[in-house]
Image 1 (tube, rainbow over the protein chains, first blue to last red):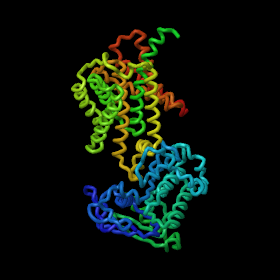
Image 2 (cartoon, helix red, strand yellow):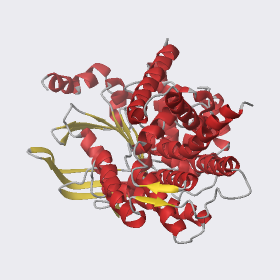
Image 3 (cartoon, rainbow over the protein chains, first blue to last red):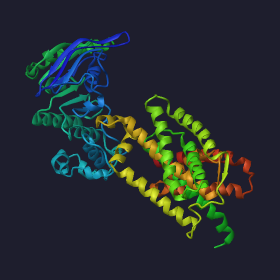
Image 4 (cartoon, helix red, strand yellow):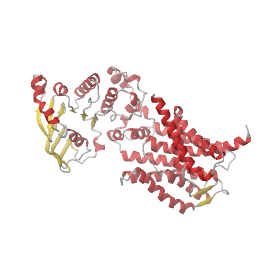
Length: 252
Length: 279
């Protein structure tokens, strides 16, 4: 599904990746942890195309994407940011935001924008979430809570099903209840539609109980990798195993 | 109604309606796509110069309106290209285009050009106010139509979150250019109507257009509940305030100073209103 082959990237004197490689399969839900500066965000930016590697290859959906523009890759990638304002447009209504997603793979014309709103998602997606989103369809996004905005951003990222989802600390600004709603929704969606997810987090509980793989990234390489066995590991043993992240963060 | 009052209010209304084209244009650039565009004065002058020059050689005055629109759109296109392709700062791009247009307008229409003897859209059986209300109505409807369209959704999205366009696989640069083209085409039509109503083109006639447009926009924001129509009311209201200062007997040499003071006062009024809402 996604192959990163021998990428290297330097920012001035700072070498973030040196011959970094990794592979993501169709059913993967990979949690990525690591101290600041480990290369987590650079990895995402390399996949989205915002950053071009100095060398190496990015293969997505069996296509070499290394030199494909970020705009073209966006058709294949769904993305969620830590900042809950980045996944939608605050000056547009919820209905307009969701309608706009349908312009993803086609040219925008002069037809009425909100006619693109997919009415069926009210019953299929919004109402089951119990977040009252169906009542807020004509409210500007700015009046929604951070949790509501983030789940809308997730829905916007999947309405035109992507080939891969990149979630960059999506719950960092959310309360526990909203975090749980978002993560369980993401997990169920990815499982049902067999879309791989890469999720960056600093939360050890998410690292332990979510996803089938866990990468501990440090100094531009995967320092340690866990498989599904992490879920059955003794919590104390698991947290101890990933504890060095905290130590290295303190030393930053 | 008192004839004297009508004599004062009528030209104010006409000028205000013409400047509502400028307010709508500035609304698109500064509010919808969040681009501080200084091309305004250049494209207003260009619309006027084009119309003046074309009417003086006998071209239909109605035809000069779409031609001015195209001229304004081209000015917006150049500003947009300078910004997106040559990576120049927003303000610098507008300044460059306005400066360049000054020479073009001089070449095309000279420093002063009278079209009093020629046929303009206001020389007709219908009163000027009716023609202007009709044109402003069409412009306002078009603005609403564009902003509610699929393209309009993306233009509005660009103003609040450009990354969203990238997420949708759209070109941020293209939508910036499109927004500037639409904005400046509105403004150029304003310039064309200004020249046709007054019957002459002056190379200095566009000075202060940006401030007038901005002030109209701020007024529109103050009377926000009916924001759409407020774009038009704001422009008219500004002309009324400005005319009042002249009626009070102030020397016209203070015109631009009054404009500058007015805009500061209105921004303060807007801030006070915002604070009241927050309280």
